[in-house]
Image (cartoon, rainbow, N blue to C red; front, side, top):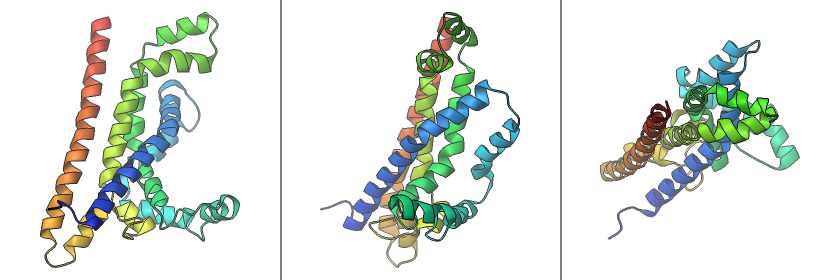
Length: 232
């Protein structure tokens, strides 16, 4: 006897794909923004910090609508992507990944920023004194020492993406097999009689995956702290 229906299995697989792509695709941008906020002073830094954290305070539906206006088929960026690169985000699983990446970005940046701020600047200065270029200092000193924060940030973004609903359903709807993730599948089952069993199954899957990602993130942070305390 199968545990899940074909539609539920598809929703689980799509959610994992969307969450993975959202976390990995936003990681380079997250690292760059976190490094700027942690290591540089520049005009507008407070504004950038506020913009990064904006998805945490705005209703997800507002963020989803903003993405639809900007990246929809008639939006300025959406029309350019379609005409120039042949890429369509609205009502596609790639659009769901974009929405999840935006909503999880603040959590990722915060984790990475804290990790970079904990890197001893004397080590970076020593490498620079020995003639290493700034990009080389970042790649060979800062990044290796801050790697737990990178993994923790990616894990948090993954967990957030797995549970994202408001921005995703506003931007890409809930098309079965294309954009219907775990959250939207659960919402859909709530609208039909006899959907309780499916709701509990999908909720359990979502809980287990998200909990695993969060536990991994916490374990990495604690391990990093223990290592830093030992070196001191």
